[in-house]
Image (cartoon, rainbow, N blue to C red):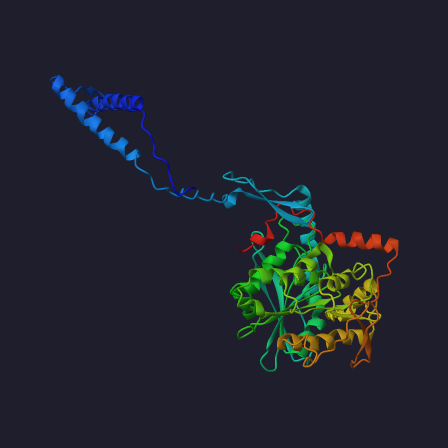
Length: 481
């Protein structure tokens, strides 16, 4: 807009027409209404009165017209108001290839998606399977004389319409625990089946271990399952919020006191997907002064399925340790895919070790039914060597201490077992254990050597981690917002 405005010229003919129109309007206004809609005409006694009205109106209009002949200061136009966002009810979540997109129809309430027949039947079958497995496994038990007690309660996770899960707790009985570890089990394996692993994790690290048993339901319509982003976002809220749900769950399991503020997220196999995904969402949700409460992520032969690990690493700061204890690349870990993702996202950084002759079951230690469950897992996933079983406890003992001290990447002060990062399969370290020396390649370890047929089976196996039937899932980014 320019700073000067040209004078406006008044056309005499237009002015006369405007005067005539104003006179007509003024005469019409002389009519009064009696309130019933009938007009009462105003009686004009003579020509003089009409002339007086005409003169008054003419003077008024000429006065207004003269205002237009003077320069007018430019006026900035008022900013247009921003459009109001569409109501929440008008946003509909659409599931596409396991990822969430949002479709908005402003002002039009979205019709909630309903479970399909396969959701209903699949969830029913899966729920029965979960119930039977938990019934057979029973409550958590600890090895006598371990200095650890175990209890069970439930915790409410705000996923879907609300999701209450069975939760096992392990508490050191000597001294005041100073660490909190959230551990997530693998596919179709409730937390109690890891009872020896979790007892040792609590004992060796003076840590409270909380281990919820979350369904692996592949057919969950709301995507509230182990490997789904919606569940990861909801678990993150347990820590990003006021932690009342966790504190109440611990108390119900027999703990007296306040839970440690800082924590580590850990998981084995499919549980590692949740541990990594939850870490990423925690950094999105937590207040800036609470982000440092998460001191690290610990993965036991983790998976990169669903892209959860890659997305989490994109969200997390590079100085937050994400460390992996990997087995030999195999069908069950998709050829060591997680190792490759860690190397890609954190080039040149120490991200863990691949145990020589390591098995997927190294971190699965159970005394349930006299070791019968352990024997079955070893039969399916390969037998573990005694030194590797011990290494799975020795390595986290040093790493967790360094995570809580904030020195994992400080080569001068850290106390755990690490090694120099080099070309895949070229850097190897010794791991002293009570069962004899173990050895591990610094990640990335040796390249995967899966055959074509093994690749096919690996792809099929890991497709179970996709959310192909989550037709009525909410956008995970909006969970607890």
